[in-house]
Image 1 (cartoon, rainbow, N blue to C red):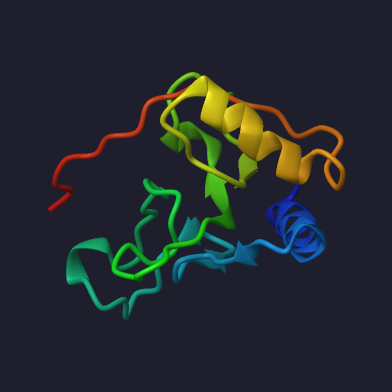
Image 2: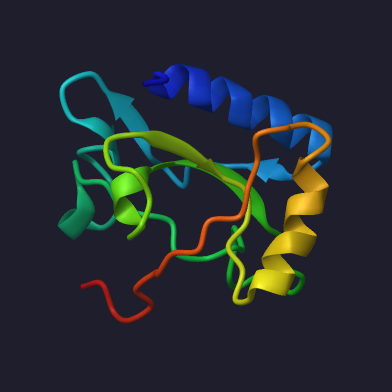
Length: 125
């Protein structure tokens, strides 16, 4: 299994080459707990917990929202192999949209692929 640091390094590399923002959405690496939000996170419900990425946009309130690349836990996404750290480059609503997004990253990440999964979109509090 690739370490979180190698996935992080690769995600940042592809981000720079593809011209797409990189963000961990406040998540940090903890050697005992893995990828988590810090213990002093602004929302006390999620302090010290992993919160999966659910949206393609980095800032949902932006006038012109843009996508980004992040590192996530694979088990947060049904149908993906468990126990891995993955780079998520886009979240799309359709296969056609996902395949179009894939074209942005394929020149810089030859192993990039579209994975169909489900993301819970309701309230998480």
